[in-house]
Image 1: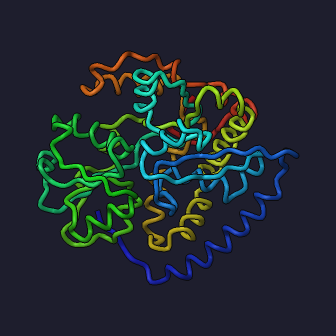
Image 2: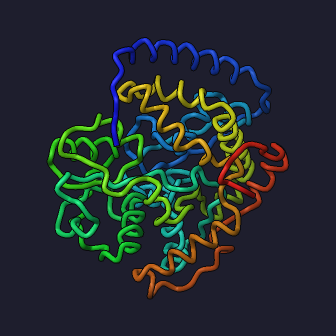
Length: 353
């Protein structure tokens, strides 16, 4: 994988800034409900920079005025990994949280926690495993330090799924929890760790230093990991008391995702402004990768949720976990209503419904 540089990055960022301001002005001018409801959203990523995946839609929906358009004020609470996001949700510190579906299954099965997902922001993981160049095969990861956000975080669980697909024990690498993606990839570039799992865009930020390479490419990673791994979830009590706010949030996310899918330049402009550490060429490469992955239909179709639940129970670590039905961890009503309001999406997407 070759990463280029561009001496005109600053000029590009200034142009992108103007484009973003123009789009913001257009977004805030859209009609919106008279009342503004509020939600607190926990993200299991301490990194406050734009995530170079479809997960960036959480910030983009705010930046381009989609939350305001649909009458909801969303306060994003960045946390260090999925376990902290779940803890915040369970404690009532936040209303909703982006968590792993496997985590929701465990919470239902082992803690009888009434939790349900209602929308997702990505399908088909745009992750990769980057390593030192002397690690030539997945089997070579055994005994080597592999940086993750935290035990049980999304990057951790997806990496374990990929390892199993290669027939490698999930405890073969020496997993080290060190936090946000940019911290992990910089640690790899500096030689402090041997491997890490990050998004394609995060990998591009280190500008292809010597001694580092991609061991598992994004397409291979995506084929080996569950297509749908995360969803935004809430406790049943919150769904009952803040259902209208959740509905507005769901509609805003899908509306914003459609805007990004229909006009890639919007995402490119926002990322160029928000991530000056990434060259314009690499931002466009990332845009090409995520183009059809936006959750233009909410990404929680019963078929996909069932596939992910079945995949989770194929994990040997789930051998003693009580079987939970997909219907027990999903609420389709919010996406259904949002799609009724927004209509059919006519562009190219893997989020078929």
